[in-house]
Amino acid sequence: MKTPLLELTNITKKYPGVIANEDISLTVNKGEIVALLGENGAGKSTLVKAVFGLVRPDSGEIRINGHLIAPGDTAGAIAHGVGMVHQHFQLVPVMSVTDNIILGDEPTRGLFINKRAARAEVLALSEKYGLQVDPDAIVENLPVGMQQRIEILKALRKDVDLLILDEPTAVLTPQEIDELLNVIRNLAKSGVGVLFISHKLREVIAVADRIVVLRNGKAVGITTPKESDEESLAHLMVGRDVVLQVEKGEAKAKEVVLSIRNLHVNDDRKLTAVTGFDLDVHAGEILGIAGVEGNGQRELVEAICGMRPRIKGSVLVSGVETPDMHPRRVHAMGISHIPEDREKHGLVASYSIEDNLVLNQFDQPPFAKGWIRNAYALESNANTLVKEFDIRTPSIKTTAGALSGGNKQKVVVARELSQKTKVVVAAQPTRGVDVGSIEFIHNQLVAARDNGAAVLLVSAELDEVLSLSDRIAVMFGGKIVAFLDGKDADRAKIGRLMAGLSE
Image 1 (cartoon, rainbow, N blue to C red):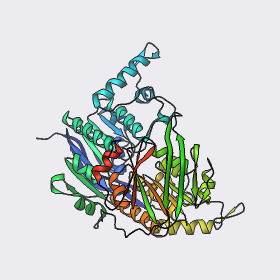
Image 2: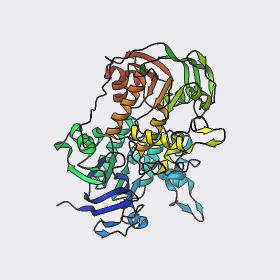
Image 3: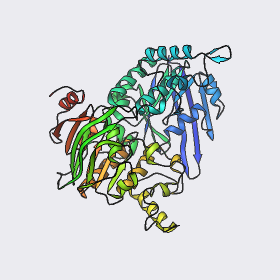
Image 4: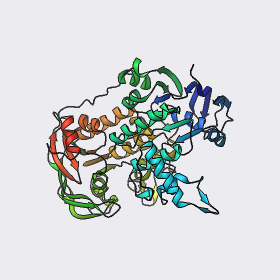
């Protein structure tokens, strides 16, 4: 007989104008992996935050190992063996990896923190779970995938019975995802119960024992990987058939719009990340850059968009050179940018959706005249884009920080693609986004291409690059190592090139 580790009974949570969770009941047994699947805004994060005590449900019961947990009692949840890895990192950027992992529970020698013991503990933890980290690195200098590892190690340090993972793979490369899924399987084998939120159908099928599907705050189905496939899960999530393959016509490539010549860019450690980079992107095509993350893609995108200094080389739009380190002027010349980190570079969390939708044109007509803002134009623009881009929100006055991850992404995509633009630079455009929203964002990028924009797609998801791109450039070691036609690109061949092997 299986032992229930977590028991949720009739959990309901309402916010003004929104029912986040309605009468949800589920169990997680010891050593079992339960996946919570659902669209952005379906109520997944609210539910797991209720388990961890960060959200106080209006009604219902939460039991862990048979103990009734008081609503909103985070300390009680932790005391009963619940650990949580949050979707948005809870790290202190200016501190080291070791300091972040031990924060709040530091090993001491007398009155002082025992740094040597802390460092040794982090190395042992890293070795135990196969999640390699540099204990001395400063967190703000690390890529997002590495920061996610630190979050996971932080949770695993406290011998947990139940581990909650809220979108843990949203920012990981395919290789890192495979490693993490192995870690999750090994944890389950050791008796830890795992409650795992994901949008990615393939990984849910690969790792879950049971799958609970939420839609509009309700549990609409419970199934297992053996009883389902990607199509049936997508239908349960969205309530309609979802086209998992991008439908697009033939590209009608015209003149070169974005031209990059002999570009050299350094990373945060002042080491060369992009070297002698040349690329042309035509109006009316999607050029996808395939590569393992960490091969200069982030530095390339930031240099194109004026967010990182160019050591040498030039970026031209329609033959005119764009300025270095002037994102506003680069945007004014016709480059729209969907950044890979929406929290850091895409949105101002404390601003309303209405304001976030005009961040790069707030002082231009029709939204402003001189110093005077046009409230009617702002409101009209927001209402139009919320409807057109299917942004799920109770109000355009809601702050961007209150939205689910996928709806935040839709705000960024709506702002960047609603303007008449010559070039779209889309970096990880569907990261942390559900299957219905992925379909929508893909269609918007194809529409931008068909309207004559030159689209540069940078994605760690090889499937995304293969399905969207008209041409594919493979990037390794800061350079383009091969160009391929998108129509007949061979996945295995691209994989070899991404690993730095010759054709």
